[in-house]
Figure 1 (cartoon, rainbow, N blue to C red):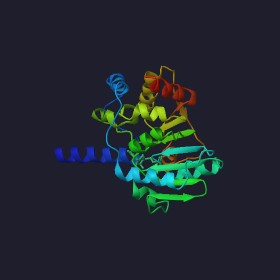
Figure 2 (cartoon, rainbow, N blue to C red):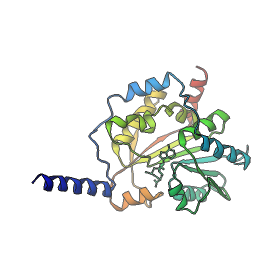
Figure 3 (cartoon, rainbow, N blue to C red):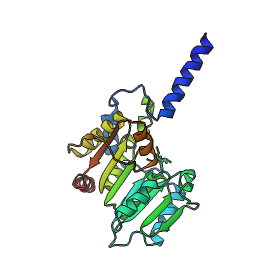
Figure 4 (cartoon, helix red, strand yellow):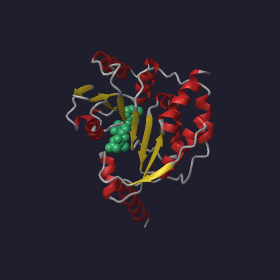
Length: 249
Ligand SMILES: C[S@@+](CC[C@H](N)C(=O)[O-])C[C@H]1O[C@@H](n2cnc3c(N)ncnc32)[C@H](O)[C@@H]1O
């Protein structure tokens, strides 16, 4: 009987995982979110840089990706780079940089090295918390920054792994541009909006979205399964004001 119950539970868990629906014990905004963001705002995160990302960043500079007169768009956690291709077509006057730490995902776009460039599209293998800090320190600021379907890290104990509760969050906001975060877990979207509002003092909210076609493989999967999708957009003027307020101490 116990075996049958365990089997049923494991099948249910597998079905849920396969559906792509986020399952969590957490039903609303994490009770420690505000104090976590507050703590990060009071100190600058100084974890040593991830060495391979440092090298990838130097290559970006050597290859002239940050030419002064060409604005760029960042697609962070681009996975296979599908959305990066899509954005590069949509914004032909911009350089579009897709970054992901997974060589297996990037390889699905035929990218076999840590740096790939074709016309205005650039794909790099990089760890985001290092890449964002390096860009910010050097003053290379994106015009738009997409965070499409970040890993939700739904266990309540994994709050600090979510980008809005990660120690790099103040630098992510400072890096700025117009930030667009999309996800399929409402709690993540609510928390992201709450953390931005808490840090900047500006009112930012979550909206439900219904894109016609999926911009990324994850978005396509969720649309096919008729799941609810959420987005949080942070306008440039908010990220800019936040950066200036941090610089001014
Ligand atoms: C759920 S997938 C979404 C991929 C893609 N944006 C999409 O929507 O199809 C999350 C992606 O973020 C990447 N990722 C997560 N944490 C990262 C980190 N710290 N640095 C770089 N990439 C990271 C993972 O490798 C993965 O490809």
